Length: 77
View (cartoon, rainbow, N blue to C red):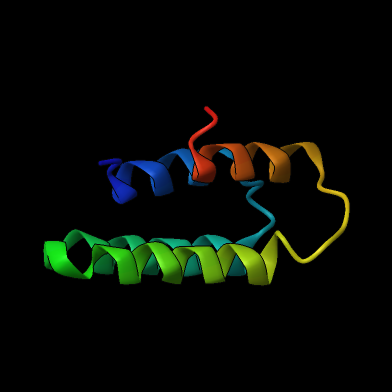
């Protein structure tokens, strides 16, 4: 199983620093994931997905960094 905290780290490394709200929300998610019970991990994957949908996946065309985030989240890279 992929480690969600590692995935969030990879995503944070790609997001431009100007995306303050997105970065803050992902860091908050990551902090919560670190202490979550294993049986709650599916809930946290859904929570991170919701965050990404709200800030990134809400457009028809994705900028290059947004496409990279998508690829990281779905496991393509």
